[in-house]
Length: 480
Image (tube, rainbow, N blue to C red):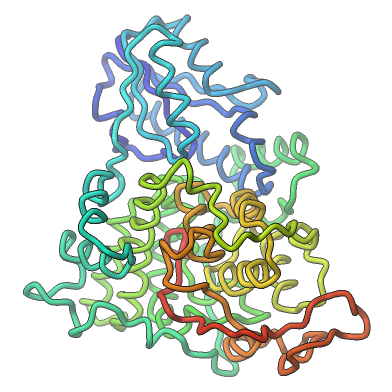
């Protein structure tokens, strides 16, 4: 075998660039579950279970397609397992002539991999991740010509490049952005189908037992595990969303409700960010629904913007501004993250609901993240790096390239205005308008100061210095 190809846990795509650089006759693939990656932050149990199960299913699919694969499970790699250790083992055993890797999604991993040529005494080729629409070079070229690096202008370039929702060089409907139409409160009695739920198979059940045993102290519940773990299941979930939820997504994407955890959100970011779904194919499928007259323009545009706009934009910002970006703290916030972010034990009804849902599902939609957990941390001066690590740990769709700019930039204004023109915060009045949480809260939303008798040490619900919450379109991990 001439080539050793390392495939990471968020690279579960059959058309990976590293695979296209070789062929089945000369390649030996390597996939490994390692504790170093599983434990560098205290990942949610369901995030770990999803990743390990999806990896195992993808490995089986690669072998079925004719690739030669070594797959090392967590039980085999041990407590000290690392990617470098597994690569060293494979280099010694198979004696490849070169190592191929598709660029990882985290700066720390790429820097480590850049040292592997010397460490393993063989050529190492880090291939561009072509699953994204904009290359690093394209983003840098766009950024060099901009006074302000605003997502809206980058998004227009992505619309022109892909041709999505374009008519003769102009945007469908005469506007690039229909976000102003996407802020409706839920009408009474409105119900949603929710995301596609997939029953765990034997592979997933084995992984659930493994995670419960090895990560018992981690946040989260493994009950009612329903994530898709194969490409086919993820495509079924996408089709379910397109038919049942996308028509309502535009109107209610900013809404929140105690009895509706998912509303019209797709929950497809988990699958796109792991590689089970192709983002551009997903955006094209949404466009097709609009063109067929089954989905209104504001819904299709809002969903597509999250994929080819925000998702691509934050990746560009991440790679352009690392490694320093991760330590940004423009507002000098230094308070520790409140302990209730890990337990949900708070009398603030909106936060209790969002964190409780996070504990159970490893998921919350973008308004819950930005306007609830994010806004509270911003207003109370939480050190942004602590919130960053919490988001990275608890959400199944969170990888550093997408999560860090959303958290440090849009949510916490830690980058001093690179992503947003001003801090993205709101008072309790906004939460009250867009949700039903305040009706059941121990706090009185209209009061600016004070606290409930049961919890006098907690801050007041409303912010005295209210900042307009919708100065920019809502950020997103992919397409929440």
